[in-house]
Length: 386
Ligand SMILES: [Fe+2]
Image (tube, rainbow, N blue to C red):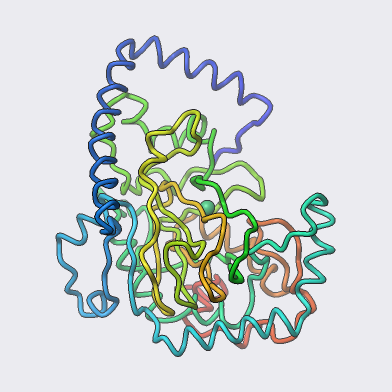
């Protein structure tokens, strides 16, 4: 793993761009060609949207359990980089988690503690009540993360990647490392800002990190059509910049589990189809952003870690909407290192090491403890070996 030198990154980027221009003088023609291809795809998405059809493939969990997922659906998932997997958990169970999360938040007086925390971090925003809560260790989250159905779902998704070649295993698709993430709860009418379209797993690292450069080598060689986003060959070696805004684990998929019904207009996440985010530079890609279809408690939503996504600004729905963020981070050296950093955070109730050190849960009643981990959960958290 390589630690990136932030002081040098501007110089390094300038140098790289110069090398690129010298080596690929026809890159502008190639980029036009790529734009045409993208435009065709985006027009298809827009057409489907105007007909009220979702372009995000859907799949029932029982098909994964029974091992009979259609090849056509797999191709759709790979093409769109996203999927809704329904009925991973029974509705009643997801609703019970919702209730227990609400109780956990209320009984521990989360909001007044959060307000103090926000004074520290974002003093201008303190009147707002942000929808993403710095909660990592509730029993509901632990139960959902370590559940067998969740393990099967992630195993299926990890196996859509190329995880080994020539006898070298890049990661173990059936062994998961828990990446503790937060929860989202939105009240009806909540107008606090959503999340503008973005992709996680870093930004300038993609230009500078040696492992990332190899991951995207076909893109840097202007052979975009040959790029395989599902190759696990180098990603597990890429090291992000140390920052609360960057994910330092290797995630094959990001995702969330719905604890309440939610659909377009309810302020949900919107996976897009590509890697970038601003109207100034990426207006074409932004046209491809679509809403998640309606989901019910127990359904899960997944997107490839390079897919652009966001959260709608206004929650227009009429009920509280809630999700637990649970992605897929298969066992590899990078994730094992991450687990070592995460373990003490769990034991002490501190924030997950990838996020701001708000540490709200240290004295929370009802927080999950070691005794709440199942044998599978202990392995996923790195306390037992596989
Ligand atoms: Fe994100």
